[in-house]
Amino acid sequence: MKGLMKGPVLHILIFLIVNVGFLMESRLSAQRNNRESGSVKAVVTDNVLMVIGSGGHGSKELGGQSPYNSIPLEEQVKIMKYVGLGCERGWAEFDTVGVAKKYTQMWDYFYEHGIDNLAILNPIPQVLRCTNATEAYAYGFTLGNEAAGVGKNHHVKYWDCGNEFGGIARNKWPDDYDQRKLEKCIAMQKGLIDGIRAADPNAKCMISDFRNIAYHKAAWDAGLRWDITGIHEYTPYTAEGFNDNSIIDPLNNKFPSNSLQYCNDHFNGLPIWITEFNENGGQGTNDSTHAQFFKKALDRYKSVAETYNLQRIFIYEFYKQPGLVVYEAEAGIVKPDGKLTQAADSIKAWIKRNPPFLPKQNK
Image (cartoon, rainbow, N blue to C red; front, side, top):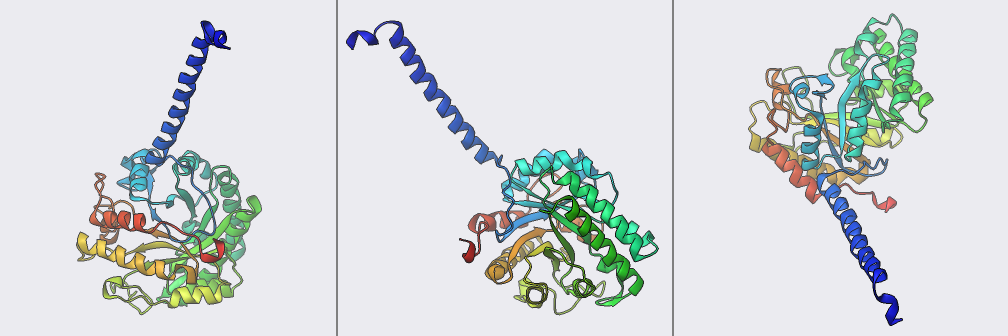
C-alpha cells in the first residue's frame, strides 16, 4: 500500500482534493452572495400573512409616470430588496388587449429577485365607452383571458381586476350610484375574472376599492365573486368628502375595524389584501411623523392579521412624484434620487423585526 501513493497517483489525488474543495467553497460563496443580494426567487404562497409591498408606476425600460420612467428597474428592485418589500402592485397596469407581453421580462425579473407580482387590469376608458353590461363583460373577458394566458408563463398568479371602479359608478360618496354605470362596472369585472380563470385556473383574482366597502357590497350582492378582497386604507381627509368613521388614523390611535370585520363576515372569509395604504397625502406632515404613522399602523395590522386573514399590504407608493397633486407628490417613501425617507427606514426596521408568518393553523 505504501508504494501506491507515490508518483503521478499522489499528484492526481492532491489535485482532486484541492479542486473539489475549491468548487465546493465557490458554490457556497455564490449561495451566500445570492442571499445577500436578494437574488432569491419569489415564493408564491396563498397563506403567508403580513407580506409588505409597494405600488408603483413603471420603469425606464417600460415607460410610465415620472420619476419611474427615468429609473432602471434594476435600481428600483435593489432599493425594494434593501427595504425588505416582498410584493409589487401596479408596475404593470393596462387596459388593452395585446399589451401583457410588454411586461414579461419585468415580471420575470421581479420573481427572480424574490418579489411577487400583482398585475392590475384597469379598463376604465373602456367601461365608460361600452354601451351596456353585455358589451362590458365581453371586453373584460377578452382582456382578462389574453393577459392571464401570457402572465401564467411569467410568474403572475395574482390579478387586480379594476382599480376603484366604485369611483366610476358613484354619483355621491359613499354609496349613491348611477345604476347604469354600476351594472357596466360589475359586468366588466366579471368578464375580467371569468377570462382570467378560463386561461389560468390557478390564478387568484381580486377587486380593489375604498375601505367603506360600499362598492364591494354592491358588486357582491349583484353576484360578482372574487378570490381575495382588496381594500384601500388612508387616513382622514375632507377635501373630497371622504371624512368618515371608517378611515384609519393611527397617529391618533384610531383603528376602526368595521371594514375588515365586514369583509370577514360577508365575503365568505376570503383573504384580505390592503392594496393601497398610506397617510393621506402627507398634507402638512413631516417625514418623522410619516415614519411614526407606518410603525403604528403596521403594528396594528399585525395584531389583527390572523383574525382577518390579512396577507398583503401595499404601501402607496414607492417614489415621490414631484409636480403632481399633493398626494402623488408626497406619498412616496423613496425620493427620485434614490435616497430613502425616514418613512422607508421605519418600514425597513419594522419588516426586519416582523417577517411574514403563517397563521397558527398552517404551522
